[in-house]
Amino acid sequence: MSDAQGPARSGPLTALRVLDLGTMVAGPVAATLMGDFGADVIKIEQPGVGDTIRGLGPFVNEEGLWWTVEGRNKRSITLDLRQEAGQDLLKRLVADADVLVENFRPGTLERWGLDYEALARVNPGLVMLSVSGFGQTGPNAQRAGYDRIALAFSGVMDMTGFPDRPPVRVGVSVADYSTATMGAFAVMMALYHRDTGGGRGQHIDLALYESMFRFTDSMCAAYDRLGMVRKRTGNVHQAAAPGKTFPTRDGRYIILTISGDTLFRRLMQAIGRPDLGEDPGLATHEQRWRRIEELNQIVEDWIAARPVDAVGQALDRHGIPFSLVLSVEDIFRDPHYAARGNLVTTQHPRMGPVTMQGIVPRLSGTPGEIACAAPSLGQHNAEVYGGLLGLDDTALAALQERAVI
Image (cartoon, rainbow, N blue to C red; front, side, top):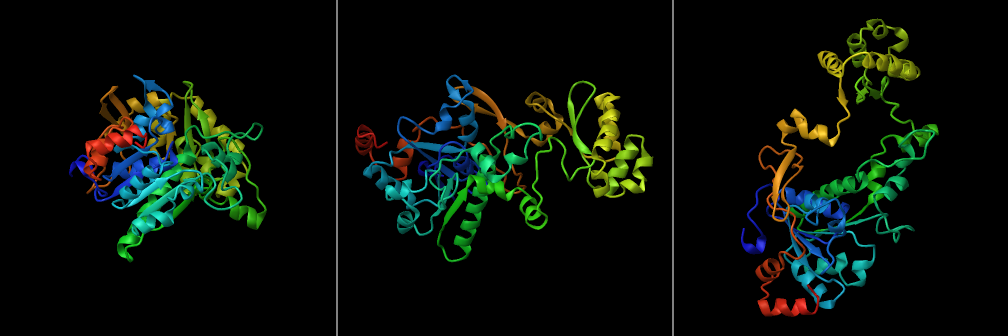
């Protein structure tokens, strides 16, 4: 690639140019996922401020580690979209872009004359992904939305935790990351339609709560047909009997999830209770669910009486799915993570080597890569504005003096 296109890249998306106007996680990570597979992602940030995630710790040498992970494979330019000159520059960038990702409050881009209809007049092939808390329409559209708010509004948090305690959040920003993944998938569908169905782009309206709501499996159907309201059950799940988070003898935890009838019989053989596997009163999952506490206690007692290695070996011999609950320390030492290349060490220009999550999913023919570290704010102003738009040093200096860039 030329300087106007950024560093040479590989991957299935090298022909794509993505403008990332988002902040924090859901929108920007959708762009990161595309960048991981070769897209030229140009991160557009407010001059002097930058993406909010830059200022969130923990830090090394005053560099945010969260930004280091999610800013990878991007070029950073600064642009004040509140100024007319900034709006004009964005339209010039849009003319040669495939995708624009944004997560402003609904109506913000429209006030600046940068809504999808306006940008599509510049580039009819543009695919625009708008991520918001509650969507572009509806009575809650103007509410701010963040990860935990989406978990609450989607119904997920009401089902998460123990029945005698308040609802709890998941330990990571699962709504943000789920929305980012669904957003990248939606962009790929829209691009496929554009490139095979007539050349026009389209606008994608994606709400944080909607991605989580879609993942609530049978919650709605069970309420509609049976009047069932799923409640918090802690580490017990209606689809796993036996199954929960079992304590081990050395103070760790092991997860077992047993749903199938054959799997249950194999587990009973593994724990030395083949009689339970042949019990006609435990032949189906529905029967076992009615005796969930009894079965879980039998399994828990067996696990607690043995070294954790012996437990794992017995379960493996009988083909039982299980996992120890791993901490990040465990992950860094785990041979499976090492064999799969799930941890990748990259060189950062200001903090040195940083180990982070590798590229997923794994493509056999066109794998992704971490080609460049997360950029400093405005690092690529000259490269993009000069190389892509043809602005000379005098024009760039004038824009900088007016705080447009």
